[in-house]
Length: 391
Image (tube, rainbow, N blue to C red; front, side):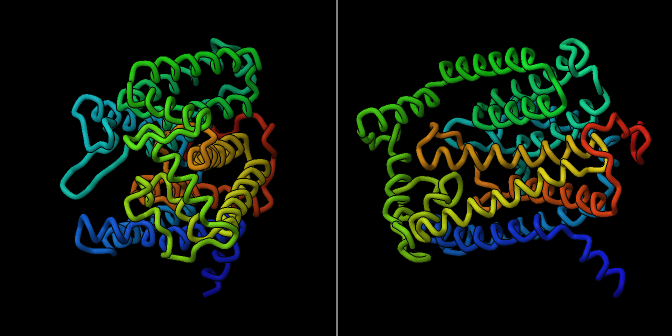
């Protein structure tokens, strides 16, 4: 009993409480936004809710496992995990997989589906944290410090672009860019990488008509206010309508109209719009507050991590979540064109939910070691070689 109580006290509730709140709201909103689609397509209004609940249980198991696993043990595992991620992404490109609107993003075996990109983005953070930690002051050298990290990001980015999946590629590159900045890379090196990444994104948009359509639809919506019922700006228009019709307090849970086949993907990429319609400004702001609390706590954990690897790991994982949230909400509110990224802990989806809960588990483990009083700060030189699992 005393052991269980001690373990409970070691849990970082500033991380857990906003996550639990988002997960609970996510289940409610997945049901509300998908009931009509589930009844029409699968003859059960609970179809998507049941699947999401099962994935949530799996995600909680992963979270608890990683919360108890010393994060230093991830060091030895990270090269193999990175190699496995590359193999899975390559298999998706070569063999193809389940996809949406021309993009192959899922590997399917019987009833089991896996989105390799979701796994790769977090494995990449772990590997980069290890790599940048061991580089130490050499990170200020382009050839010896920045280039190896850029090569890892480049390989993953090219494979993800082949799906094609520009949104996840941008999220991956932004996360890697910020990790390099936190590790101490020179501004001129970062500027070069930013330019290369922007050029890569531009080429990708020009090569794929559906991406160009998204950009053109986004531009025309704000430039002329026109709506293309064939799809270029329809999704954005309906998202704005949903957010605007909710007012301050919303139409009420389950009373929104956009899920009646007006707004595409109401339970996945655009669930934030449904929250705005049914729960109003109060609901959308509450979600933002929960995310801000989570991100600030994640950065605080990073700043008080017991070693530089822990700092880079916690900061990278927190930034990865923040980038996804920022890009998703920016799409829903029309700030940027559609990217196809889910909203962490809220959107329907298995791989993303399980991976994001795994991220929370790692943050909890770093926090538990922070709370023991061991603290050397983020500026400490590499210490992973002296830790369990280091090589």
